Length: 382
Image (cartoon, rainbow, N blue to C red; front, top):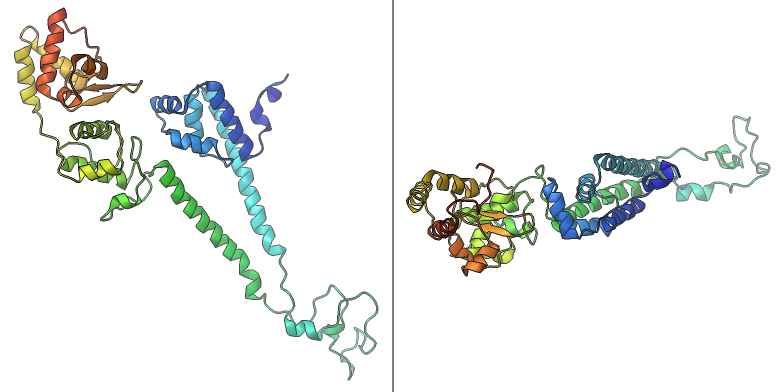
């Protein structure tokens, strides 16, 4: 069997067939939608489960970046990804060529009908000799009792004076064109609302109520005025975060801290309830300064004060409100980054884990059992 027979991409001709092959790729990978999302995120792509489900449930040509994110998450090689992208571009070009052909063909098939007055005066177009009372075509003057020569012309020729095309004939084509553009604009708005993506190129206009036109849930990976509004509310709530409109790890970390202090479900995403709480009276208490943290760590670890400060800086950047999310979805909290499992074993809640005094004391307790810092593994400097 040759390569063309083994490669299903060589036989794909429509967008529906292309999406069907993408569904096969997802099925053969054995990954769930959430697992694909995590794999794509680890590779530097953004592919939320909702977007993936929408793409695989349609028969329209998906976006190129979404295709690449899915293929990379499912373990496709760079060469395979290039072939998929090339096939997609070929299908897109064929669709564009078909649209151009249809746009050019529609006006040529329309011919203006004869005006009512002209149709009433003209002779019916039938095969055969001209009417008996008409002059031959060569005479320069018509007979006294005959119709004008133009009315007795053979069928197929232009009769009567040439009149401009009536507006009612030419109007349908531009009307359809504008309707198509309007429909595409509406679909674009709906797509942005469903996927939650606000692209950097979009106008970042913030009105008096930014949440009115925002997605129902804001999550990591989004960009735009809705995220900017969320970040401003976090800052107003007592949490330092870059106000840049990008929902990155820092915004996720600060949002989790707010949810922990506010008694909300700790999801790292912002829905209407979270935004309402951010606008309310709930404030995160101010935490220790870096200088105070350094002094306390050195006091609690007199045996190796420099090593203890260096470890805390590597783990959290000396930020007591630092929350890290691992690849498996588990979280690590506070100055010395204690995990969810460790918090459960120690019988403390998340608010306690964000207390720098508690975190330093718990780290000392761990150190006292081993005499070293081997319990933690941190190689990245902050």
